[in-house]
Length: 234
Ligand SMILES: Cc1cc2nc3c(=O)[nH]c(=O)nc-3n(C[C@H](O)[C@H](O)[C@H](O)COP(=O)(O)O)c2cc1C
Image (cartoon, rainbow, N blue to C red):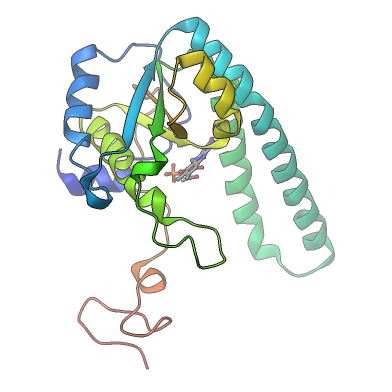
């Protein structure tokens, strides 16, 4: 498929068919993904593809703990906003509520069936081989992730190219010590994400919901939107 089509439709898949991903399909996706960039080309990322049913069950059980806390907090937040709206004028946000509610229902189904999804790919990273340049700024350091997540996104796109859907998750990272022990991950590796992969049970979306370019990209000064014909709004 065209790269552009893969980029537009590589979504967070919530419903998977039970069919396994053939070994060669997985292998070839990793073979492409490995070309992702990393600081100093130090290649800090390793992957563990978990397909063993008992190990997936254990991962799913752990995942359920932060997931439940997350969805309870999200639902409480939505209910509070809905209560505000009943007293006020923000009726326009109801469409947003409906969308959010569906997203949460779908993600809840995804969590409840995590052990049944065909593969859970654990992203491991040797943090000493990342190259964070923002550790002295007195804010959360994020640059190390730039040596990790490009290859992960490459993997998701490479799989999308051959009709395999994925979901990038990070909630299970809070169980890093347990996950490392379960999978024999060496001490010097951290876990950075868990990517669920499998053939989708529903068609891929035609296009994802994201900010328009004008809200995302600025010309020369933050806040000045770019436009396709080069003109910038005053
Ligand atoms: C950094 C990151 C962490 C995420 N963690 C989780 C997660 O733990 N659980 C989950 O169900 N989805 C997770 N997601 C998926 C997002 O919810 C999803 O990408 C987002 O809602 C957009 O979905 P869409 O691409 O289908 O439009 C994560 C995505 C990213 C990029």
